[in-house]
Image (cartoon, rainbow, N blue to C red; front, side):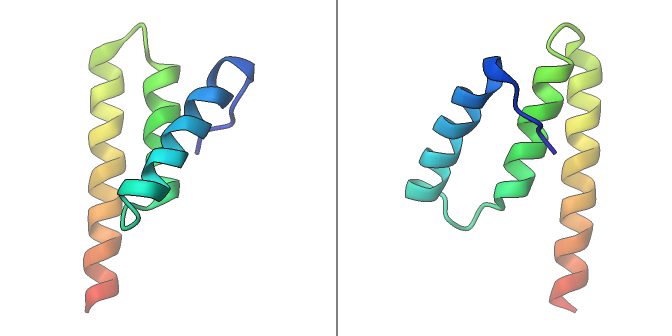
Length: 68
């Protein structure tokens, strides 16, 4: 989950505003976690991509479990 510092708080707020207005079905925790990983690994894009894929895999598995 993203723990926003000064440099990321505005970005998170903007993305959350757009999510609420246009993508209400998207999980806010998922978005926050992805933003956090992308920010943390901005200098290492391969690692950021790998961790984002892991986040999405966990989220997808949890959604599938909820549907059962």
